[in-house]
Image (cartoon, rainbow, N blue to C red):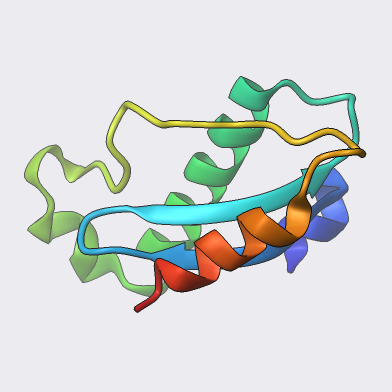
Length: 92
């Protein structure tokens, strides 16, 4: 919630699979996709390590997120409902 307030980002959906996470994020055009990914990964990792310090000790190299990511964008005329449904289905 703090990320949303501070950076004008809205998490519309969050889904997980065995080894990755899907985020459907809405943001102002001020941020590039790379900047959004970097913000989300760094801030969530920092919060997880703060709340559960034992997690960092269990990770190889102490890094929570891998270096890579996949991102796709949707404009104001894109089909947000289809993407939202896809992210929700990843939970199952």
